[in-house]
Amino acid sequence: MGDIETLGTLSTTLVGGLALFLFGMEIMTRALKQVAGASMKMMLARMTGNRFAGLVAGAVVTALIQSSSVTTVLLVGFISAGLMTTAQSVAVIFGANIGTTITAQILAFDVDALALPLLSIGFFGAFLARRSRFAEIGRIVLGLGLIFFGMATMKAAMEPLRDVPAFVDFLAALDNVALAALAGAAITGIMQASAVTAGLAIVLTAQGLIDLDTAIAIALGANIGTCVTALLASIGQPREAVRAAMVHVIFNVVGVLLWIGFIDQLALLAKVAVPEGASTPRHLANAHTIFNVLNAFAFLGFTTQITRFVEWLLPDRPERIEPRFAPRHLDAKFLEVSAIALDAARLEIGHLCELVRSLLDAAVPAVVTGSPLEIDRLRVMDRPVDLLHREIVSYLRQVSLGSLPEGQSARMMALIRVANDLEHIGDLVATGLVTSARKRNEENVVISPQTAAMIARLHREVIRAFDGIANAMDAQDAGPAKAVREMKAGFTQLLEEAAAHEVARLRADAPRRLHTYTREIELTETFEDIFKILRRIARTEMEIFTTRPEQPQSDTTGHQAAE
Image (cartoon, rainbow, N blue to C red; front, top):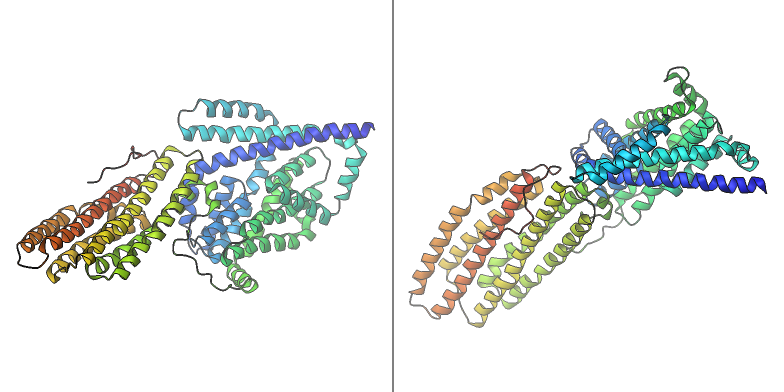
């Protein structure tokens, strides 16, 4: 009975320490994503077909967010959104496993004495910080302190367990490396974090409850356990995304199977890598790093073959036809890293530009000479614009619910303004131009070839301006936006010529001249309104693409007045 009571008390302490560890990981990871999100986005965005660059990118990004599972989930999201191919993701997945070893390397130090000082510094730093970036850094330190305090609590709980026969018997069963690896995989699969398994293994080795070989087997199994998160994230995703998750599984499972029979040699390498007299936890951390580094470089030469294998294993499914308004880039997984989520929203605004551009292309033929059926078709074309606009604003709202740095908050507001302005252009076509075209039909107005040519010139300038703001959004370049801003003088000259032409036509001896004049004025005024909105969008783009996203921007939260 005494052993059961002791085991219950110590188990409660152990679980409490684990809870502190997990809570610290959650706080630290969330803050790291906010602080390093922009860097992560740029690193992954610049990644090319160079497999070594991909390896480094995967290692660095995972070291920043402390989870290879999260990195793989983000890659699945990138592939689903069409931002990356499976072939590009393979090297990144290899590098992600290297990045996870940083946690074990830190935890292998005797960090118990640092726990409370880090907790104090982190809490008061986050509490007193006046800028969100410094507050996030404070939370990183606070999370690290909680992790260390959780480790110390688990160590304190583990020490008396060496005298509990039931616990000793359980650990004795782990002398079988296959069982130890399965235990590591199960713990990681349940906790969804290999860092937890690494922490537990370090605590057990520090207390002398398991030997180095058993601890290494547990760490190897943790690599398999990380596959669970990636596989879950790939459910219901495009084939390319499922293939990326499968690469993660193949790399980890095959890597563990290759090394499971050479744990003694791996332990020897880990001991050789550090000075004599180093602790067993240090040896474990080194073995974990050596295993993942050697695996990554061994597999790196076979990225093409691995890609072909998963393509054969998971062939393409029949292409599913999506509605035009279906979002292409708005993946909920990106919400974990606000900088990447904002970039996804920017890309989706590019999709919105395509829909509005189609609407503008169809506008002039329908309103100048179109039949009632063609006019109704133009009105219906605005519906996808409205639906996609709603999706974008809803996604950006979810982004805003997180704690955004000042620069990202300003960028988010700017993207919302651009999306709203594009939707407004759609409304001007679907409401203003369609209404005018219907009146033209009802009044039997015939627009002359000369006037149609003048309207076509205005339309071409509007399209040219629209292409400029679309290019700026796509390339994140203020240059095309600046060119749109500089189109004002030329467009004003066109408007003056159109006005003079309309006055001349008003004096012409032609039937239903007043009705015709009214319809022509409506068309030119609507194009003028659209051009003003495009210049407003260009000004917003110049603000967000000439300021680094991670730095505070000028006040851009108010709605810009039309010029």
